[in-house]
Amino acid sequence: MPMPNACSKSAARPLNVQTERKPELFRVRAGRRADTETIGALLRELGYPDAADVATVHWVISHPEMEIIVAADGRDRAIGMVTLSHRPQLRMKGRIATIDELIVTEPWRRRGVGRELLRHAIQRAKVLCVKRLELLTPLGRAQVAHEFYKGCGFSEADSLVMRFHELDFSRQ
Image 1 (cartoon, rainbow, N blue to C red):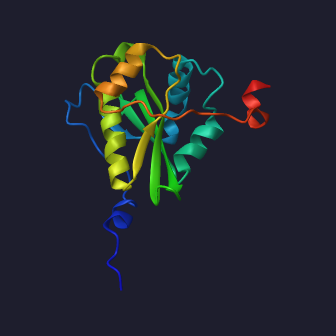
Image 2 (cartoon, one colour):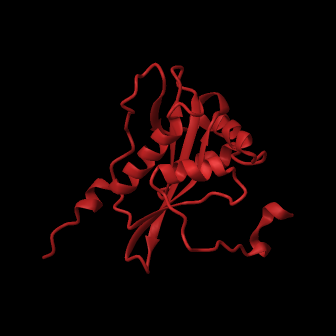
């Protein structure tokens, strides 16, 4: 009989991590339904005005292959977030994860919040035993964002994202 996979046991653990930074600055925690309003504000600040209605945030928070990791200020308000989607993939012979959004509100930028959110997403990907961790960022984003991701250990991939527009209802 094969030995149980250590990753399968740890993957079920909930995200409940705290940053090593001083608690009065910010802490990192799992996203909650109560964060819906601030998640919407963060997405609007990033340039997505119609994203993150209440039903969608609740759906993502409860989805077994999605994670919202939030940085919260001393009053427990979301000041940044990272979303992580993960799923099995045949060609990788295991799980793959994607960082879909990383947002830090303007007053909290350049204070270590984004780096700490990425660190927690990477740790969560390790717990899930992913074979690959990818990060999606629009080509049009500022070069500063691209340099930030490179400084956090990401590199550009040799792939091209293509979309099937007949299913892209946001364009209608």
